Image (cartoon, rainbow, N blue to C red):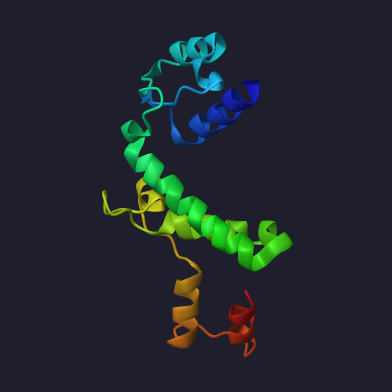
Length: 141
């Protein structure tokens, strides 16, 4: 429980405190400590319906996409999955959602972030100079 609160507080101090939070019915989110802490921070807790994941449909859809990407990535990279997981997470944060039309990066940071494919494009188009082994690096990554 304390671990969940610790990480939530780290998130809140980076991105701001929400007015409301809609967790599921997990024990970490229904404990008295969690509820009391949210109340002291001025965050209203709105519980979703128990055993009814459709109430958080967009999140569940996002989780399916995330699980699918991670599964394929881990299958391909085996035991080295942890070395490049940040690339998968970047890809997830970079792609606009169908429902909102914005990427998570754009919504949180307020602008489009330059990604690995942007760098590849800039090298191939000649906008930036790169040593010859760049294409070898990209093909190995």
